[in-house]
Image (cartoon, rainbow, N blue to C red; front, top):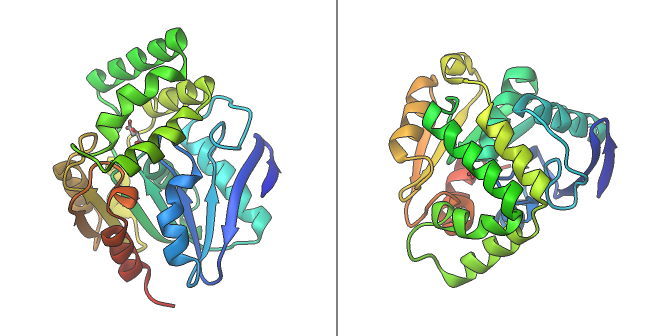
Length: 258
Ligand code: MLT
């Protein structure tokens, strides 16, 4: 389905019945990364699964910040008549989920930050982002699979998962990729606000996550009152895809049976 938002056209899935759950994808992927959750959860929950601005079928790309992307998602929920929602974000999706919580806390019933962090980039990370932007500008989005796959997936990943993630990366528009890297480079530091989160929170990490280490995810959980923490075995950065059984089990027990 598609909806015309102030920022452009957003493509999304709206599937299932029950309490609403917003699933926010990682970089440089699209909403199909949530396929294992769509299958497992749509009999109990209403899943709202957008392609973020410029990704998947949400076109065209334009520059954004985490807070502006949160505002796009808020507008989407308004349009769908959804009042409160469990917000679930993987990695970049988690950065957006935190920005969403900070702007619309009353709307957030539960918050799940998977393979994500709360702090801003440090200078080394910002320099790496600039290197990535320059590489995309010179080489197009074709440079992304070789750069991203070894970081997104754990060592010796299953060939089917590699193919699936590569297909998603292959669809990325170069400008969408560059704008997202800029948004990640310039994102706000939410780490000093974590103690204010009053809704139930689940922090998920992958035991072999090469982008956001288990210790970093643990530090986010430690800073949030009453946060639950779960480490997904046999998983790198994309826990929901690499080990969907464990991820779905953790998510379901957190979201609660209907
Ligand atoms: C993601 O997986 O969404 C990004 O790689 C996260 C990041 O680079 O910080």
